[in-house]
Amino acid sequence: GPGYLDATNVRIQMNGPRHADGIRAYGPQSNILLKDSSITVSGTENLGLMSWDRSNVTLVNTTVESLATELNATDDFPVAGARFYNGSQLTLNGTTSIRAVEPNVHGVYIQTAGALNTNTDSAATGRASVTTSGSSGHAVRIYYGSGLLNRLDIATSGSGAYGLYVHGTSTVSGSDVNVTTSAASGYGLWAANNTTLTLNGGSSRTAGTNAYGLLAGTSSGITTVNLSGFDIETRGSGAHGIYGWTASTTNFAGGSVSTAFDSVFAVYANAGTVN
Image (cartoon, rainbow, N blue to C red; front, top):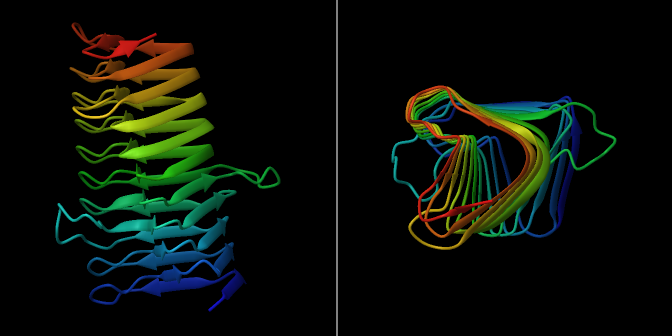
């Protein structure tokens, strides 16, 4: 049946041994508005927030911290600070932050018609943020989902941890999105498969070896990336600024691209197109 929660100054802490999530929302009539609050989870395979089947959760000036561990690195349903799927929608407004620290644990994972919105409320001030520090723990991963991202800071510090990873058949757009990664193979942006990624304003800055600022495309699907007023900076060996891979099209309209090493290209098209 219908469920509605409107709460302020709530503190949730979960340290159950397994599958003890901070909040679960289920069903098309489930709506949660959480303001000036915090959620902290530890243990094994516990999520800060999980939602499915068309429910809606909005966080305003709220923090979510995942200290939980992931047992199966190849899990199709990985541990995350927040995981939303099957039509459910997560909105982060104001200074809301989500943080995950363990390997293979994502910050936000959107899948199967789920959606992520950030600072879509013009009355909300400040910037939302999503950060991870574990290897292969992507900050924002959208897989067969959608996103409308505004005033969002994304950061990763683990090897193989991407900032914004959009794949499957997904559509993501937004403005003023800043991405920072600091470890090897930590791509700032990776758009793959049948995905369209459009960002107006913002940046992608990487510091690790082979950490591309933008990787567009993969071995299957047709990828389109549109960037305007966007700055890309890489500071690692083998870290090309824009890497246009198979069957991808990248349209770069204003901004800057810079790299720091010899034989590292600002723009490298490999079976892809960069305009």
